[in-house]
Length: 393
Image (tube, rainbow, N blue to C red; front, top):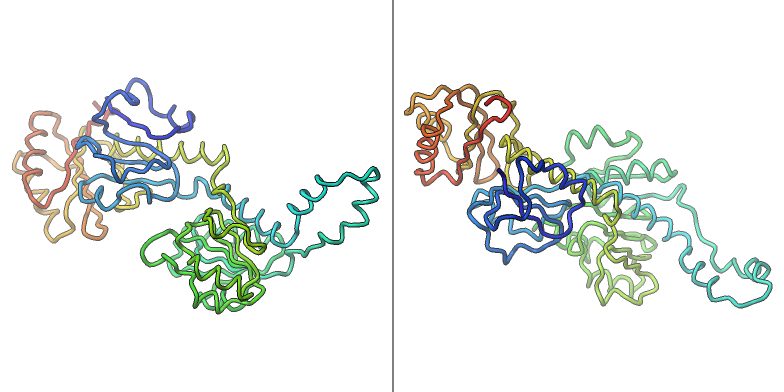
């Protein structure tokens, strides 16, 4: 039976995927897998039993990914599961940016005139705004969220330009051909009325929108950040707002010094805060974690390569190892020492580490444990698992 530990409240629709016959939830301090949302694990002492962590969300900054990688712990996220929720909030923010709807609602609530209808009609001009149709939107980062924002903004009548030098093939197919692709980020910075950023937080994207980038923008441009707070340099934004160098800034990441500025809108991190998004993330996190535990297949991992192979043999050996020459030969030789026939095999590398799946015909668990010990004895092997095919045996 697999042991699962949860942090935070995970939507029941996701947890229901763990069948009671094969999974125990929060019954052991030696779990096989962890599923969480925003709980910070940087101070958590990972038991050696943990082989995978699934984050019900896209960001994994709350997980010590580098440490997990070195210890052979696969970290999963749920890209795209909350994309629609974030997209809708970005579009909402675009509408709010051009139409003072919130201010108008607050003003009406404060009125005390007996003939309210006439009073409102006489004073509504102060809340006149603009339309998005014909305005130019720049989308930096064309992942799941950025692609959806770009497509829907175009459908609203906006002229849309996207920039992402690393756009995936799958995403490229999903983006409307009406969305123009910028070759350089400067094309977006210099020409767009609205600029929205949708990139992951890594070393190369930290403060990627700073003084230089903001200086290149139109003085009327509005910048939106629904990725991570650290993507945009707060000091640079404040300086530009004070100097009138950009039209405004909308962020989903609250920071005290951004408050009380008329041209800055701060939201309380609502991007993925919908019931549907939480359910979708929980379902995807449970599905990827369950699949890895039962078959060793890796998909949507932030620290190991995608490795998928049909599982038809009685047992599967999974090996996380250093990405160095001749490891496949060494793994094969170690298995051959026990006269075990290999049915199928696949290997993929990512950075300093690689992952190998080996399907074997051997059914003697004692022999397989000897193979495990033999492989684990190598200093270049990080973690080995023996997985029984429940559909075959």
